[in-house]
Length: 373
Ligand SMILES: [Zn+2]
Image (cartoon, rainbow, N blue to C red):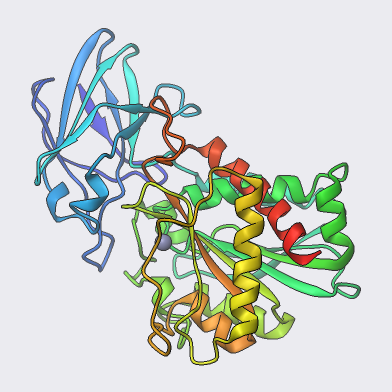
């Protein structure tokens, strides 16, 4: 048996792997940070053999115990289809039990979205006449920050921003972007065409390339949580936010969605900017309008479960959604998807999955069209 994680977004430490029924593992912390919860590793074993893998430091993970309750890990033989495998949490250990039908199996916290796939997304998108990739600058590890501009900047009535994966372990956010971008660039899709008649889109499908490749849960190359940097980003600590914020100032912004995954709640939900100093009835009406539109187009979205709403004036202004809403007086939402499943429409085999995240990305376009119409 051999366990490895020396690949894109790999993260595991092997403590003991000499018997199939007592494999002991640990998740590495994000570099220069105490956050950890993302794991991704490969077990090369034998066909027709049961493996019992214990992540021994799961109890100290960033979202323990809530994130592990009712959670099932994902596995894949072909690195394309990720299915759920029996997983238990005892307060300290996360135990994954899986009977191998093939020698090599991959395991992860959620279906990975690789840096190679990200490059394919950017390269493929530029082949649409409506789409231009823009180089914003570089990350601390020297990766490019790319924004896609979709539509006619000169003619547009509104400027719509969608950014994703500030927290790199929330890979569902980039699966969402793939669905969103694919539909927006489909020139036979009426909703996309209608939206592009009036609006221009600024899209950043991966806000945290370094954390993504390093196998981090929540931070960039120097352990910084990007979604606490919006008030005062710097090229030394948070170039990703610094560069995107600068582009927002240059281009303008009328609506912003910041796409994430939530470790605990088994639902899709939105979080608004209620606690910002300038929040008012117009913004409340805009929030309600978009929420109603999304509710009407997909049963994957709901409004019963979500974060507590900030009291007036109590918003954390270092968070993207709050900073954006205040700075531009615009509708801004954080969109959260589950790591586990949508408890309203559970799927025991796959849980919340790449294809469901992509579908939600497509459906959000319909909601935007209804909201803006
Ligand atoms: Zn997040």
